[in-house]
Amino acid sequence: MLIAQITDLHIVREGELLSGRVDTRAALASCINKLASLSPKPTVLLISGDLTETATEEEYAFLTNQLDKLDFPTYVVPGNHDDRATMRRAFSGMANGESESPFCYSIDKPEWPLVLIGIDSTVARRSDGAICADRLKWLKEVLKKATPERPALIFMHHPPFKTGIAAMDACGILEGLTEFRHLISDHSDRVAGILCGHVHRVIHSSIAGVPVLLAPSSAHQITLDLHNDAPLSFTLEPSKIALHQWEENGGLVSHILYVDDFLGPYSF
Ligand SMILES: [Fe+2]
Ligand SMILES: [Fe+2]
Image (cartoon, rainbow, N blue to C red; front, side):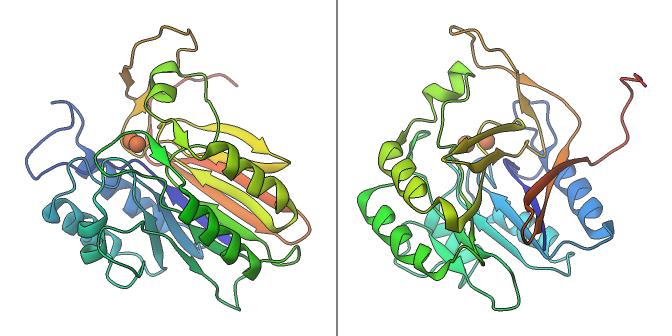
């Protein structure tokens, strides 16, 4: 099973640039063209939040129109820039529940070797996140669908660990983090991995041996600065897609694919 992941698209309103500089619509269109050209074809595309910048119907419509160009399914979870009710209208039927309730769901297809679990780690109108008691209870139940032979792949927006990028850690605190890590630790034999976004960079960690992988933004990156007092700043790097290959008995093997051609570096 080949799982493509993009994240932190931050689609802006038509005619606008993010921070006056970044054409996030063009970046997504390039990403979609690349995804559509891939061979072998991904089984599924996961988008781990911050789909839009301001969560308007029109921003989501641009995204869903682009996704219509793909002939494999896409599943999404919200990030702190998204809005649950508007997402439910744009991705009708993906996550059941009241319009403002957490956008959580699982995909359990017998023909797939993994159970997909999308967790909404957001808190409305806040940049930090939460996996509240209700979400933990739901996750514990849904993890029962998974087995060591057919494990779960979780995807969510906020990373369940500190990244060392101070400004993002400060705005990415995950309420319920300790309880979430305990739950994953208790079920580590039935979780293949956890895929996240939010920090816009490629970052790897683990919980009780379960790999946790942050995919890079398709649009723009946060500057890598590990000083405790580093301010939040952005860096334009080549747009990237994460590709996760699931091999039974071999676990999750993750690759990063550049979307466009770019100049250098030319080390060899
Ligand atoms: Fe983001
Ligand atoms: Fe975010």
